[in-house]
Amino acid sequence: MTAHSLLGASSMHRWSVCPGSVRLSADAPPVTNAAAEEGTEAHAYAAWCIDPEAGEIVIDLDGCIDENGACKEWGAEILEWFNTYAETSPSGRGVKIYCRGELPKMTTTAAKKNFGGKHHGIELFRGARYLCITGQKYPGSTDDLRDCQPALDWLWEKYFAEAPK
Image (cartoon, rainbow, N blue to C red):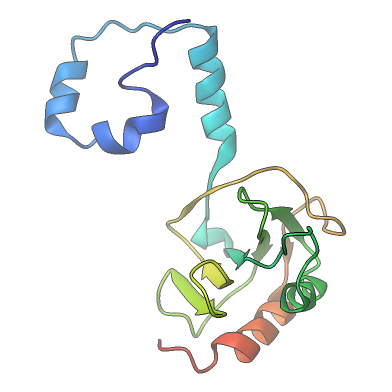
């Protein structure tokens, strides 16, 4: 087994902005192997940045899947509104919905509505966010990102209309 790279993609967020690390890495030999290259490709595949210019929005339904794998009523209602790509989140207890549209009343890049617990609720993300994708398509969702403006308007009015802006 080979040693894990100290300056690899997994920890880039820590070392790429640290002047000491940049200075130390300047003289490091460009060593790689098949496993390192595969890991780099996997990182590139598993991370996706929301593009605000394209109107991309992600809705994270935290805790909407119960311990038996069934979708809770509030999550099922939301999923019925969104005819777009959705996938099971890395924890297996949530669903991420990927769509296009606008959230004109949202002044920040994220909004959250909790349902009695740290990991139960709805989060809306637009722009400047990287998210881990699983590729585990949620049953009944489409294969592509679609415009979901009517569904976004409904979601905002139902859950976020009174949220602080």
